Length: 107
Image (cartoon, rainbow, N blue to C red; front, side, top):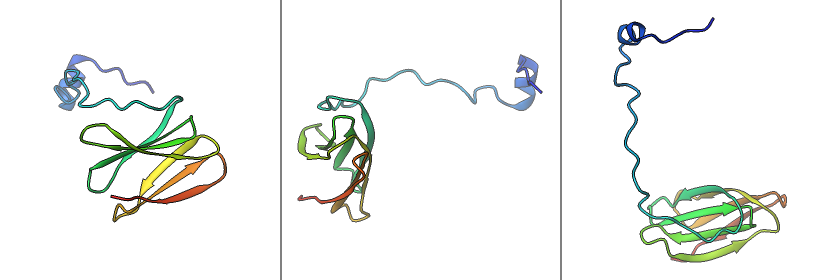
């Protein structure tokens, strides 16, 4: 069954204004450095670091406030997942190279 949303149906369901699009905003920062696709990204628990993993086999650790790259960690193949430990002192990265690496981050 296909439901066709008519103005009367939308008003009856109370959906007016529920799907209002926000005006587009410029990004606060743009992080660059990957030479391939960016496949994953995460903030550290304290919000001070932004980490991304990509098709260029790199895990890039950046200062989230200013966008400056602090460290590049390497895998032998594409990185598809990154995650911080709850205390933010370690970072795990997963790759198509069949490894999960746990890195100790210096602050």
